[in-house]
Each structure stands twice: as structure tokens, then as C-alpha cells.
Amino acid sequence: MLDSTLGELRAALAGRRVSSVELTGLYLARIRALNRATNAFISVDEEISLAQARAADARLARGEAGPLTGIPIAHKDIFCTRALRTTCGSRMLEHYRSPYDAHVVEQFDHAGAVVVGKTNMDEFAMGSSNETSWFGPVRNPWGKDLVPGGSSGGSAVAVAARMAPAATGTDTGGSIRQPAALTGVCGLKPTYGVVSRYGMIAFASSLDQAGPMARSAADLAPLLNVMAGHDPRDSTSLERPREDYARELGLALRGLRIGLPREYFGEGTDPGVLAAVRAAIAWYEAQGARTVPLELPNTALAVAVYYVLAPAEASSNLSRYDGVRYGHRAQQYADLLDMYCRTRAEGFGAEVQRRVLVGTYVLSHGYYDAYYLKAQKVRRLIARDFAAAFAQCDLIMGPTTPSTAFAIGAKTDDPVQMYLNDIFTIPAPLAGLPALSIPCGFDARGLPVGLQLMGPHFSEARLLGAAHRYQQATDWHRRVPSETPL
Ligand code: GLN
Image (cartoon, rainbow, N blue to C red; front, side, top):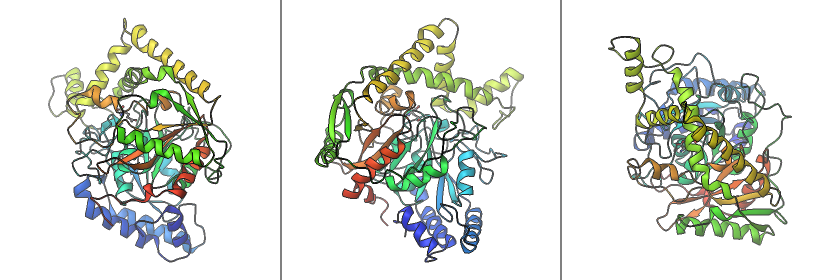
């Protein structure tokens, strides 16, 4: 049961072969057994989850089931929930209780899903290894001394270790796709504006986007169906007709034009990663897809642009944590200014403080034009590179990350090395594009490799279709991690 797909779980619930209370109990037991070793969850409340499961069973019995009624799901702890605290991985919000649910949480609630807990994450979603969390690092089930990637590391591990069949994540510069790649699961960052950011704690608002994480592309489609849709409470949420993200799961691969950007296949990427990605692309070619060599010349600047713009936006968004309105407040202080300083020095960890410093610097008078404005201009050029590329191809493929999972502690002393992990994931959000990571093999150490698929705006259904066709022919996504056998 723990290894079932969402489709199988929905059929079992509908056919009354299992109840939501039984199913939820099974996953809660798995969390109880594995959370000490993985640290994937920050908050779990079994009573609340089982009460939701009982309500789902009643709904099923009345024949009023929604698309996910009775299905357990884990939410990244960046989504505000009334039922459980919302920490965002920070000491600042360690005891924070939201008075409302995030739009995404509400949507899953309406669809009947059962929340099994809130997952660990890098503090305020800043990180690529889940090591910046106030609640400690998350461990990768493919090697207990390895990072799971970040910032949605807890959600990725929850899915990889079968502690939940599905989870939510958020992606600003790669935080869904990079941990998905490093833990052998699937994660989709939708087109900017497809999923409402209401109640999702803000990091860099022009980039932040929520998306689903699960074990297969076919499972991501019904999850995105539930998450997507207009919400007037987020001014960047798009008003578009509803679509069924599962509608292209039967995508014809013959004639599909797959763009291969030179910049994604150069030096600096592990040979084991490149070999697995190339083998996946060869499979598509064998099905009749055509590869198109391309260039995305400005993507070389993407990491630099991102690490100006994201900290700039973060420094503004995080100014609300002042010890008055939200969260932690220093116990002892001399006056108001001292209270602000001590509160923020105590409440924020080193990486968050670094981002606030960089952000205020690049926005300050005298540096604004040289850094912030320049970065905005290059961001536009990167978007243009993609627009030109998608005139020649239907989707782009390449590695999700330059390496497989690295050791805990290996990059914590060198922020630039850490930032370079995001080199392949940052360009898509800078251009607002949808992008998906799916498992495509293992390196020589037996660690999962991620294949990234990027498409034009609103091509989620096609990306999922292309991924699903591959997953019908391969079983990389079905492998169970060595540290957490079933
Ligand atoms: N690793 C990147 C960062 O640290 C991306 C994080 C994210 O997507 N939230 O900012």
C-alpha cells in the first residue's frame, strides 16, 4: 500500500478496499518509524490527521468524494495552516500559528486530502541542502550522510521514503526540482502565476511558485489540477480557463522537438549525471523525437542575476519580522531599535542574514543601478533566450543538477559552491517558465539523477505527458531508497 501510486490509492478508496483512516494510519506509522532518522517532518499531529481521515471516510460513504478524498498529503512548512504551526524552518516562526490556511492548503482541503504533517525545509526556503533549517538537517534516504537538496528537502524525503504519497513544495530558484532530483522523486514548478501564493510565506515574490512532488509524473497531474486556479487574493494569480493537466499523458513522441542547450551539457557536470541524462534523451530519440541543438547564451549569468534579485526581494519581504507583528521577540533589549536588532539577530540564521545584507546592499542608493537594475535587464535577456529557443523546439531537456546528492557539511562553509548547485534550475523561474524534474538513472555511487524538462509558459500538460511516456518504459521512479526499505 505504501508503494501505491495516487491512482491506485484513489481506486482502493473508491472501491472501499481500504479506508482513509487505515491509509492515513499506515503513513503516520511510517512517519513515526522514520522521522527520527530522516528529520523530514517538523510538525505531525496524528489526532488531527485521523480526524480529517474520518471526515474523508464519511464523505466517501456519502458518495461525495472530491478528486483526492482520503489521500494523505504532506505540506511544506512554508504554507500557512491553522491546524498546525507554520515555522518556515526558522526560529523566527518556531511557535507561529496562522489564523488562516494558505490557498494551496484550502484547495487540498476542498479536494478531500488528509494532511499528515508539515515538512522540514531550509530557513525561509533559502538553501539547496536543507541544512539551513532551524530544526536541523534532513537526511537523504539514499545515504544517511547525504543532503536531500533544498529547500523542499523534507517534502522530497517524505515522498522518497514513502512517508507520504505526495507533498507540496515551493520553487524560487529550484527548490522543488533540485531536491526531487537528489532524492529520486518527481517535482514540477508550474508557470509563474498558475498557483496562488496566498498564505505561502514570501521569499522572492516575483519568482516564488508552489508545485507538487510525487513519485510519478502521472501522480503530479491530479495534484496540479487541485492546486492551480485563479485566486483574487494573489494579484499575480492568473485568470485562465481551468485545464486538465492529465490531458496529454498519452503524448505522441514522434516528431517532438527536444531542445538541448549547449550550456546544459558543458564542463562542471558529473560524468555520471551526464551519462544518465544522455541515455534518457537517446530513449526519446528512439521513440521518434528529434533533438535540436540550441544556445541559451545569457543563462551563464542566471546564478549571478538570481543572487541579486532574490536577496533584494527577500530583504523587503523579511522586513515584516520585527518582533512586533510576527514570531520571535528578543527577551532583553534597551530600546525599540535594540529590540529590532536583537530579535532579528536571534530569530534569523546565518544564511537568511546573509541574504538580507546582500539584498539591502544591492537596493541601496548608489548600488541600485549597478546591481539591481542591471540584474533586472539581464533577467529580461534570459527570458528572450528561452523565447527564441521555443521557436525551434517544443521542450528543453538537460540535467536538473550538476551533481548527485553531496555530503552533509560539504558545502556549508562556501556559499558560492552551494549557489552553483542551482545553475540549471534558476533560469526557468527567472523566465517564469514551467519545469519538471524526473528520475532518469543512478550514478556510479547508486545515487539518483534527475532529468529536467522545461517548456514554454503553460506547457505543464505537455511536460507531464513527455515525462509519463518515459516512465511507462522505465522504472527509475519506482526504486525504493536503500536506507528506508519498505
Ligand atoms: N537554492 C536556491 C536558494 O537558496 C533556491 C531556493 C528556492 O528555490 N527556494 O535561493
